[in-house]
Length: 393
Image (cartoon, rainbow, N blue to C red):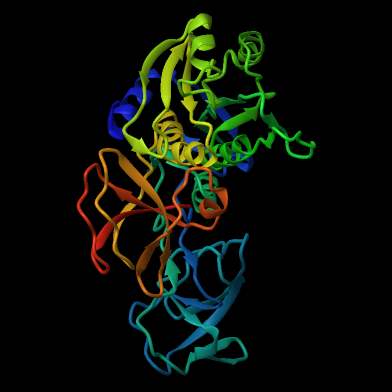
């Protein structure tokens, strides 16, 4: 068996190289920027008024100072000449400040008398002018790689780019295996169960930025596995679920090796998830997950999500480990790294490890918001002591 960290490194080594594509800004939320964006303009592109009021050409205005009103400028228009000392122009938010303008007096602080405006209040040294290029300047760089969010997209749009170059989403083929499985909605026989793992894996990979697809369930025969594997060929990552152990009907590795897979490793020193394996099949990375529902989903979090991040040139290890006080005593750990289902309460700032840790209990996992990570042979933890905790998204 190898450690979790070793297994993760070996998975990174077998991932194929990613490509780039150019897409519309409207389709870019959640995608990973692959090339820097250079601003094609200053922002703002001119000095603009931050308030409705009157712009004057007076570096040191005083209470009672008066100015001749000589025009008006609104957003989208301009004042055609230089503003001179002793003059004022009515101005609205976002409008270009006339050449010569030094300050905007907000409209509440001015008295209007015919074609004259008089300052009746001065309570701030703020000019209320947004200087040209005060947000960003022509040629400024928005750096990649970065997972694009709505704020990023607004910034890129203001830099006058309508398209971005992003990394292509990794394609992932998910294959569940086993004669005992039927898809949700079908009626199982007395010896069958509902196939659930692939739905959770699919959803988690979508959230991670991948393009997964769920293939038909492969039966416990080499011919069935071979035909389903043919559907998966060409995917960046092939994920098998179940059949990773050493039972008489666990034929997945055998079928993959027959197809040409070069095994990278098998068995990881972790709980749950020991039977996990990985290999390379043509250009595809193959990751074999255990069949137990909790095992497959935790291995997805520990291995597949970081693999997707690595493929997209993001921070490779997405595990967010924090140290939180345990609400209870936790016994000494065995020789394998243990990911214990738990619940973190932000009100008490305590994490509570669930009593039931069986790897078949989906209900426990579904009601957990964290995993307490116990290192191999970690000593007994008393209530109130800090434990490494992985917060789940």
